[in-house]
Structure formats: C-alpha cells, structure tokens
Image 1 (cartoon, helix red, strand yellow):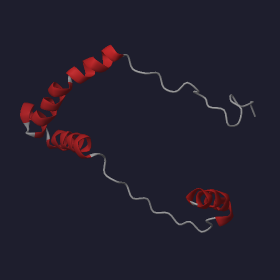
Image 2 (tube, one colour):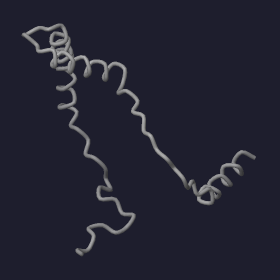
Image 3 (tube, one colour):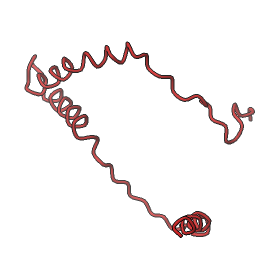
Length: 97
C-alpha cells in the first residue's frame, strides 16, 4: 500500500479555495439580469422550449429564489455512545453556570 500523501489530521488544502478575481465576479453579476430573463423566457415556452427545458428553468428559478428543498434522510442509529458526548456536555453545563 502506498504511503499517504498527507499526515493524519493535516488538510490537503490548508489555505482554502482560491478567491475568484473581483473583475470576473463583477462580469458574472453583470450578466445576471440577462440570465434571469433567459430562464423566464424558457419557462414561458419561448424559443420553442421543450417541456423538459421549462421544468428545468422552473427548478433553477425556484432553487435560487427559495433555496434547495430539504432532503429527508432516513437513518437507524442503534448505538448513540453517550459516553462520547459526556465531556462535551460537561463543558457546556460548566459554561452555563
């Protein structure tokens, strides 16, 4: 087995994601109204939009306007290991005093 690239607990990207250049961000934001108008046009059936294109445009608009829908996850957790949480709870209880 090859040696790991990073030591345990070491981040593979310690300085984080590089920031987008401000000029590029401004260019994207300037195109925003046109992109929104295009989505609304597709939603309304413009440019012979197929029903699948209209549904996708509606999804994009709703997700941007209201946020992504909450996704339910079903899980069965048999062992909560309360002993693991005891030190954390103790510190929380001490900080409340």
